[in-house]
Length: 56
Ligand code: SF4
Image (cartoon, rainbow, N blue to C red; front, side, top):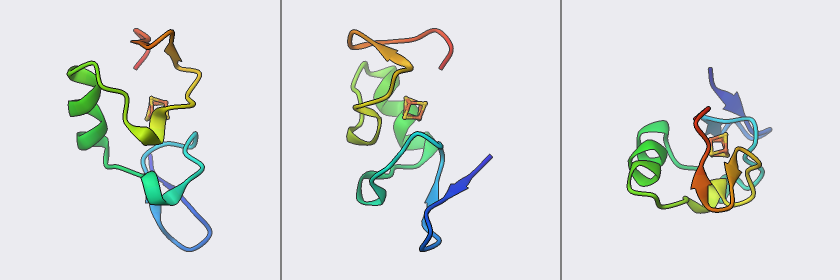
């Protein structure tokens, strides 16, 4: 599923609020696989205490 900002910018996630930080699903997955939290996911409640929640 894709989500859109009002200007048409595509977001891979409904939790993202700053379109300038949006990354693709592939980029996010690669960073999370390396235990790096992308800026676009920094405030996400799915990430607990800097660790990746098993739901992701
Ligand atoms: S970590 Fe959070 S903000 Fe980032 S893609 Fe997943 S659900 Fe969205």
